[in-house]
Length: 325
Length: 308
Image 1 (tube, each protein chain N blue to C red):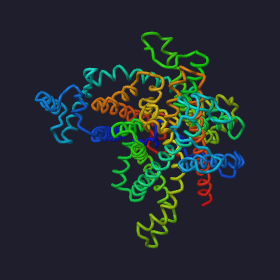
Image 2: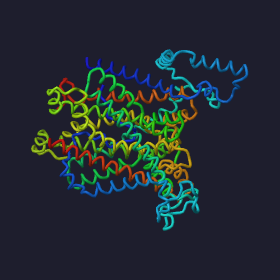
Image 3: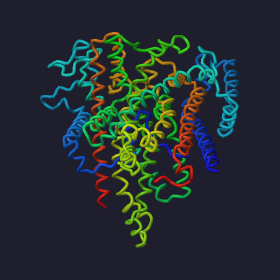
Image 4: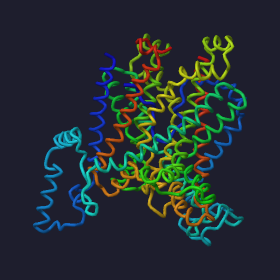
């Protein structure tokens, strides 16, 4: 029953998101027909007028806004996310752009999550275990500092150190995973590290806060007094009940990173969804922009939904329908 | 559907910390000492004063603030006694440009955030106090907007409307409104259940009076702590816009455009790395200071709450 309600909620959110995405169109100043046609026509000639008519029909601009939304949404549901009109690129479908660009961004996202968790888990657990001690304060202070570092600034510093001074890593560019594995990983190091540093400071703080509370509970005292080694207690007993806000945050960032890598993709010249979006925003390919924004946002919505479901798997109290203490 | 945490900009922000982390103010005072608050406050005051007074600073004897587009010396000079922070890629004083650039940070950090605080705070207050259908509509709307990647939303607005300061400030304010609405909503929900609100209601006070006299004063404090964090996020967002080529037009300096212009030279000429790294440091110190002050304010509020 609960899952049905949640699915309904997901559907409502999806519809709202698509409506709001569509409303981005209303922001467009000027005539979208003109931007679709570019400079390759003469508005005064008969042919030019005819062209305008054709494009206006093609973009369904002769219809009212609700009707245009329904048309567009209908297309989206059947897998038609629109296409670009660019004179130079000559009309690529948004789906093709996604097929090309999405895997790159997803690779960055997954690697970032893994690296961030690898950094955050030990730090967060140690900080909680030594709560109030020097190590805890040191970890806390450095996380606080990292939080204040904008990711483009951190990326720039890493570029300065690792590619400009030490010349270990490329300063920009991307090699496909299928082309050359080693080169691919090398081109991923700086963007992934940059994003992961920021993320891990958030994760570590979440783990520390929740675990510090869990460690004060009776079942931990019980486990410790049975003589179980501290590391075992931390990992086997304390970690699972301490991972709820971490899980939420991971979920948010699975979705958030798909759109959140934009600046990083721009800085490191990585051809992901983010940079595709930027290119199309500046080329005023608004159909493509709508399609991409919709997909990116849906990723976010879906990730949150999955987290919601995972909650009940992780926490028996929710599964039974009672509220968490 | 589980409510996603308020996430203004997809950059990680300090507000994702769960409320279980309770530190009493006294303990905290011993922790960091007063220095951790005084230094950030001094820094923010300096930046603010510099930004506000930039057009008149020249008239003060002893201060030689140069116009931001004035070429004063050879390009790429490193910091020296004459040019404290050196010169940039075309020979303009970096220190002067930082001070002028503070005006953009100030506009984005204060004007956008203030607008969002007032509008979003009002929405959240109404939704949290009246509940029911208003709550459902307003909060669904807020969480829908919050599921869009914020920086992309800001960029779309700015790119479509034109990248002048007014549009940038407006775009950031629009995106920040639902974040404030959600925060105000959560606090109002809790405050509305408190004894003093019930007491006022049982005395026959009208809703309007209860909201203004009882709820608002208790919502505004936590909301302003949140505003400090969002101010930092907004300043970073301007930097993000600059990297995407949509911040203020040259030659008007902003910290973001200074970093972005400097980084283009970083790879070709590593010897002048200070051109990008000095504004990076400036932005970092500002964000760090705002987070520290925000943290402190939050700690003080928590302390006051627990005493009640």
